[in-house]
Image (tube, rainbow over all chains, first blue to last red; front, side, top):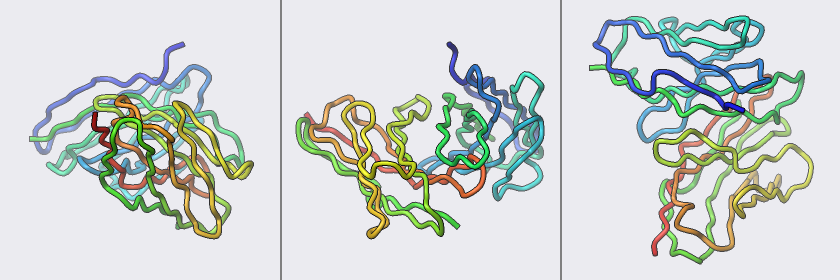
Length: 116
Length: 113
């Protein structure tokens, strides 16, 4: 059973460019969340997708957008890249349960984005 | 809003000695709490979780944590450290609605031989 897979593993982009990161959730999971982990910090929640809609959003600008497909896979798009967007981007998948805050999230290995 | 504070950014122990990683939380509701571990160049792995059942939670690899409401703490312990435990550990609280996770800043555990 494949876990959460993310692609690419590493990426170098220039300021002002746009980037798309991809995530396939663990088999049986229907919810995908994205996190940004800057160097030396804990992951910060970007947004969450369920039933192809953005359900929750963290404190990130509109340059960060996403999408979820019918097969539950997801993309994170970042426009107009800034140097400060350099980070490890983590995808987490889980199974949505109404009112359940204890659902375990499974994380991928992340995409290391470097903006130069 | 909910938050977690990891009291030590770095902890160094000798192999075979106990491990204590400290975490305090802030929440206006009964929280769900987690500990995740991140090895270099690896994804985050769940060690254990507390979801209002038993206050002493046992996890993988010999780790356990105790939920203390009166102290708003959720410290992670292990009786005997192993070299393979060297990693970064994150204390995490789940948001009130949905599966959003709020991470602490992390504690880097170093294990000396």
